[in-house]
Image 1 (cartoon, helix red, strand yellow):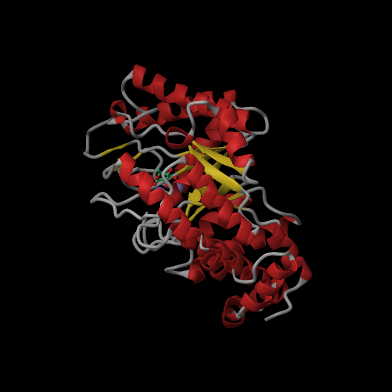
Image 2 (tube, protein in one colour):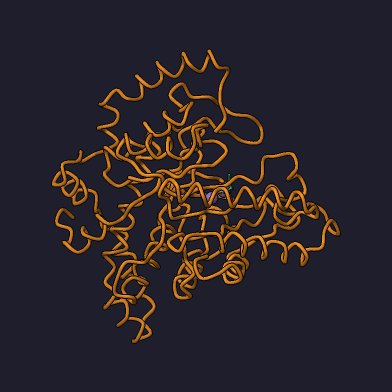
Length: 393
Ligand code: RM4
Ligand code: MN
Ligand code: MN
């Protein structure tokens, strides 16, 4: 399809996809990591790489930062300036209450008052950092949980989580939103303090009106109907945003749409239907949370961005009137066909023409490969990496 409807293209134009700083750095598995010459070593490298993706796609003006990994010693002003110098903005702020040794038995849910205080203070600092860099989104992921039956009182831990989130919520400026992320397991394997979307929604409700749920697509057990979760949370007004990635088992952090593009299409259709009901765009964050251990990182981010755009375009092509009619007639085949027809439509030529009309390359991945960016980055970073002895995120 070369002529995509104008209202579809207008919606795509408003779709901002936030990139994770950590997705450009060398990361790995529990068993080790494979280094890439072109992987980002510093915050500046990560922002340079994100700027390259934005330059070619026009869709990624924001970069999520991890507080301990990315915030320069000079502080917030330097961070915001470094982003602005590259035509970017700082997106979600990701506090880190999981790496320090003191968090072995939990952070805000710890038995120990001093550990809880330290974790909450870090979250409060992250609120201040967000306000200072012009970010309105605080994303909270906790590694908190236990490994053995009997290890802890889960209800006491629930109460500690509630009071911590409430304290942080109270400190947030009016414009800030708190996104509460859930995950069924890892690093805790018996019980996780925020194990699923229902618990995240309950914690968000306890925290206050600006708290919502963050749906990381990989944080579900196989078989979970994620689009149902998304539709339900959107209707409750508690859908805060996404961490896009794909998975075969659970938190695999693979490129979005690589394993099951039809699932991502259905998730995006839940957004399209919610927006149709509401008569306007949903106020949700479309963020990426991926870890590219095998693919070149910038290529994977470009692939992600164009894939989300393609699948969102397909979701927007679903004929919602025909779908409603098929549902009224209780014709299951016709209803499913509405989805499958849209999913089967090749939107790539239409999106290429749309990009060109906006002064962007029709094929961002090919343009990236032609640009020589990867080779230059590898040359520069290889030298610095061997001098410094490597990096983590
Ligand atoms: C988690 C989760 C969070 C990320 C941490 C480091 O699995 O996806 O979003 O910040 O990893
Ligand atoms: Mn995540
Ligand atoms: Mn994850």
